[in-house]
Amino acid sequence: MDAPIPDKLYFKIGEVVALTGVKAHVLRYWESEFGSDFRPQKSRGRQRLYRKQDIELALRLKSLLHEQGYTIAGAKKLLRSCVTEKTGADSGTDAGSALRLLNELRNDLVRLRKTLER
Image (spheres, helix red, strand yellow):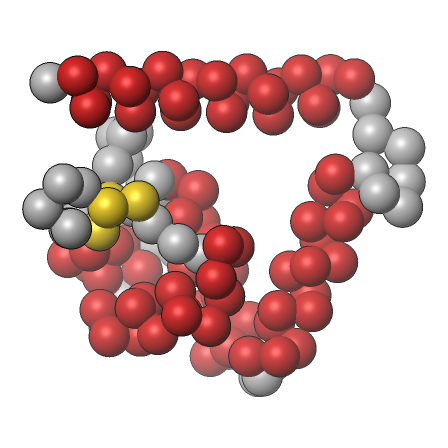
């Protein structure tokens, strides 16, 4: 990726297209194929709202599928194995990593609550 991802809470699909170089219909297709691994939140008006980690995953999927030649099934399998490693199901996870993950989740939930209160 050439440009860094801006420090924003949410991005609209057009912004994600510009940042990743992946067309909107491809992003929507990936949502249907990768399920909960790649599913942006939606506003009350049903507009897709992508987070920074969604964009990072889109860039990873683009690399796997378009540059490295993985199939959808192969990319799913690879992502599952990475999630297993990150959650420590097969290896020891240090408490600091788990705490950082929980803090990130908490911060996302607080931001979402503030957004919904507006």
